[in-house]
Length: 72
Image (cartoon, rainbow, N blue to C red; front, side):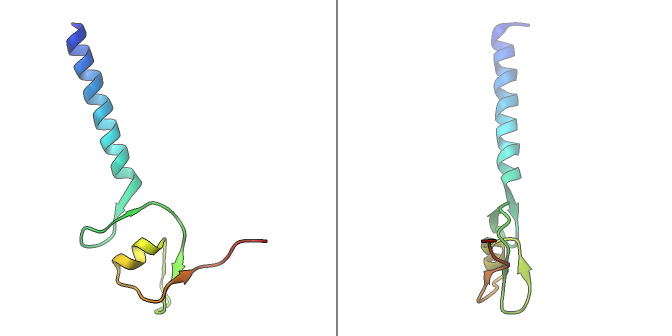
């Protein structure tokens, strides 16, 4: 196999891995809303808990506060 062909294959594989990894970091909530996969739960005034504020915002939830708390 020629060096240029091998270089192209390695570059294509690395680009694909980067692209797939980028998609894995975000999850689609609603209507094209992209939120990071960070678990920082919030509870909103209608009683539903969302995994983070971004997810709550995408669902148009109001008056959200952090769920639970930090141990001291």
